[in-house]
Image (cartoon, rainbow over all chains, first blue to last red; front, side, top):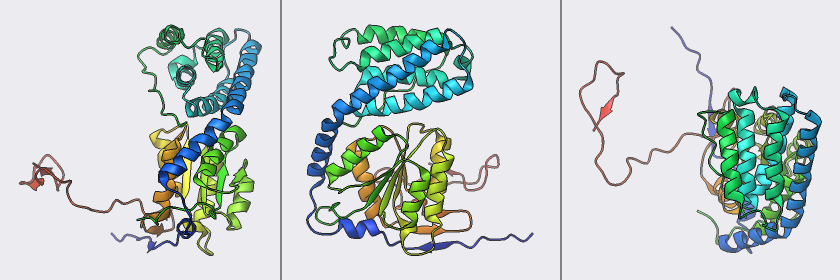
Length: 171
Length: 178
């Protein structure tokens, strides 16, 4: 039996980025990372304002649902927002908020949980996210208690499933 | 492998992210590395135009829940015949780092797929690796992108080599046993 062999070309690539990076006058990795950290810290206030706005929008959505089961479109919209919240909160090491958002994100991905989640349960997670987005840290000390309750709620909706591990942050 | 210290000042980097807040965070990191005014684009049409014009040296693209538009951008870059645009490093950021997602991005020709949030060190190291690695580039009818095969560097140090024993009839040929 004959086989048609696909022609494959293997080439040494010319990487334009390499040429640019090789120009004199660069800075060390340590200096670059320290400066990147500083730039992120300069953005922290604005990023947290963005988080608060996003969570407020989620809360508004939760109220609008008024106890009904979530539609597929609702869940998709929620996941997109949560993905952004996870990214921004993770970048700034807001672990309680990351964990809460990850619980909800994973519930929305769970086939078992998807059919049981309603607006009331959704709002429980969103309220917790609002508390944890407050930068004063006022609610941080009660965070473990709240997270334990959310974990139980997670297990109720998605029995036997393990929530993902906390993600590594950036700043 | 690298020059004395990498100089990002002249590098043109494109950030594709539909979310402006997340794009700004990546831009902030790049600014720290020394990149001057990275291109921030928020839709794939704009990205295709910019990349097609050949003005970017590397791209950092965020792949959302709908991966198709971003995969399309990557494949279009890899298919550009003229110049060296098709060789540019492309780093994919995603919050949904499922094996299927990673495979799709790599099959489209991404150099790296990294889970968000990305730390500055992770971004820096991948950019450097993508620029200076001596990986070949594969062009075929179904795939254009970095060679995904690992170089055979022999067994890891320490320990003994696995040796081939007589074939086990219950297993396929080539079964190795210590």
